[in-house]
Image (cartoon, rainbow, N blue to C red; front, side):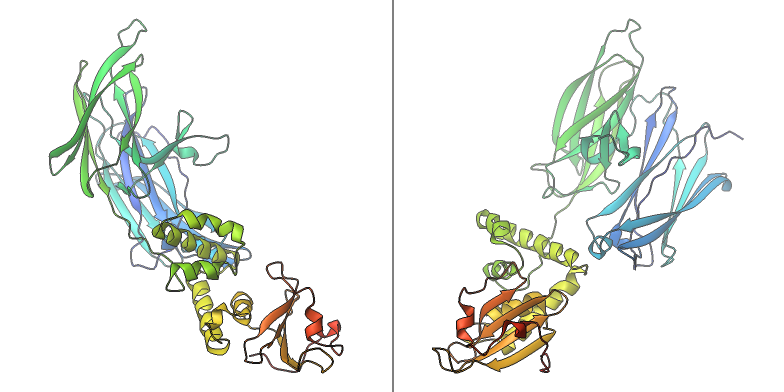
Amino acid sequence: MNKILATLLFTFTFFACWAANLPVNIDMNRFFNEKHQTKFEINYQVKYNNLSFVGFQKGYFADLTVKIEILKSDSVITQKEFTNKIGVSSQNDAESEQKSFMDKISLVLSGKSYKIRITFTDPKSTNSKTWVKDLIELPVDRSLSDIELSKSIATADTTRYMEKFRRNNKIYLVEPSHVFYPALQDSMYIYYQMFGPTNGTGGSISFEMEYRLLKDKTILRSWETSTQSTSSLTNIQTCISLKDLPYGLLDLKIIRKSGSKPDTVTTFFSLGEIKEDFISILPKIAEEISLLKYFYPKSKLSSLDVLSNDGKKRMTTQLWISLAAEENQPVLQWTTLIKNRISYANKFYSHFKPGWESDMGRIYIRMGVPDDISKRVTSDDTKFVQKDYQIWKYTKSGRSYVFIDIQMNGNYKMIYAKNDEKENSQADWQRYLGKNFQEEDLEKDSSYPTE
């Protein structure tokens, strides 16, 4: 029985799953080492929303169990199993479809007829996925490795971030699904190796390479490059523009046209359209921006003016997501709460304009139901006739607000705000209330029930 020469290398992150099977994107590529042996690299990726996260203290945590088995003639000859802990800071991250974890398993085998079987399991939901693949070495006469596809290639920093995805001090953000979205990125990046003899003098050898992009066997684009090498093993990376390519399944073919071993290697990828899910609470984007001004300073929203309609929707969506994260709530739960508050404000605070645009509506939408409401009438020593006014108090934040019905038509105006940097008090607010009003009343609770 042939012996396994190299060890397995791991790093992992994981995700919430409500389906019967655990969705995991997996891709295996074969590369050379300096001895011209085949090195198998298995990249896998799981989205956060496909794991069962549980809140604990100030974070959310999930588990992913990974069982790796090497088989020969359907018999397991070695195996390894472990459970990884995954932590995120917010429930929005735990439910994210955009954020994911990715890891790499690397191994070198001598001999043939091996298989690898990897089982991914979420212990909380018991959802799992098993992946089986023949470990077929690169042919002895092969001069080109497989092709690895990445979203980006970035210069590595000094930390251990994505350590398993580093090559030559660069981090390769691999895309195991082979799916790319031109709306999100202009290009994709490829990495492959070329193995061949040197000229024996230490000088460089020139290799002519041809690249072809095909759809349904029709060449859409082709180009040639020249690669210089002084080593028997050459690492090649390049960028391919996705501009003007059609959506759907495409093939990439790389042809080594010169040298003692002409060779060809192919892979596939898919270009997809993104149907963006915008978050909107009000029907018009202008109203949506006005609503967000209740929560954000105008300076943070000023850049919206120069954006397209879709750009505004995209940015307001991100602002709602950020607000939900600050409140430590799922974004759907947060936006539903705001919608309910708007409905309440429109029902009880509408006078000549929708209630959500009124002063009382604004505070109710931002702060929710007051802990204490005191309903009063001004004294008769002001220069105005007696008017109704209300004091709203929020105990936890220490905030208080005074609203007065100046026109005596039910349209209350805010004249005073305490401990709220987003609101301004009128300089002479006390003159509306008369001498009988004491500022201590802002601290006292009333017996009047909240709405």
